[in-house]
Image 1: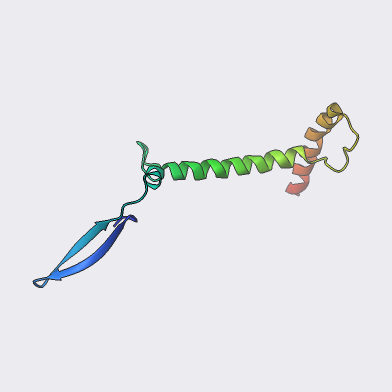
Image 2: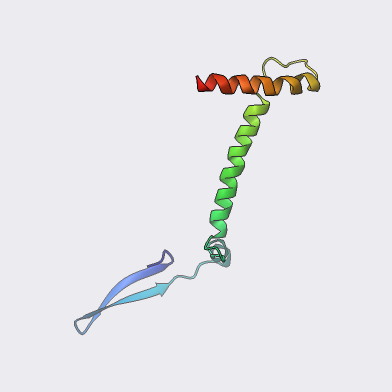
Length: 96
């Protein structure tokens, strides 16, 4: 039984049969949940992309804001020189 069907049980002459009534969803919803050749839907692809984008965005933000408080007034080259060193030191401290 799929999520887009309503299942009801009808009895006739001491026998039971399943009646499936298809619901008519808007074309956009059908498009979102249509499976491609790999068996994936557009909705699942969008969810996975969003999850990856948020994860990489958080890592990017964390790495490039490691020296946020102490770099006021520094030149971009000074900041660029300190980021790898301080990121590595933060990583080593998180391991211990």
